Image (cartoon, rainbow, N blue to C red; front, side, top):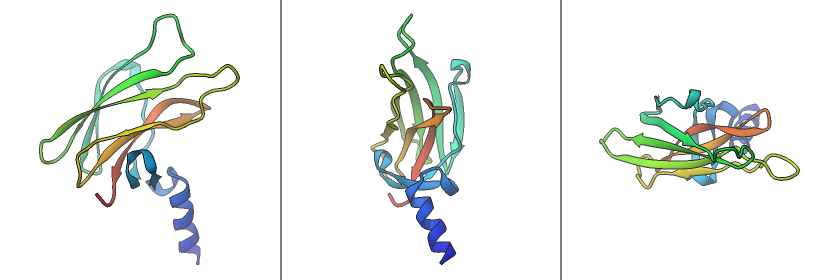
Length: 134
């Protein structure tokens, strides 16, 4: 019974036990720790057999309350590469945009993606996902 309860929480909350149901990235996924722009320097992370490279992010000059666009390169074991982009951050007039956003690859077995992650109420970070079933 306890195991079923823990599994249920894991499905509901995508950050629990590093698995979760992520509709934007294809369903039941492994979910990485939270990453950020790291001073806008390119870096790579190997997660669940997929290499994710953060390339850079752009933001409109002198406008800090709109979402910034982050760019990623995803490389699979078979040598296939795909580019992903994702809007992170941004505010509405009243409060931060509290809607997680995501993008996924068209590659299958596995498919992979990037989702926004909430840190201190700001969606300016992201997590990498790898689909468990396709």
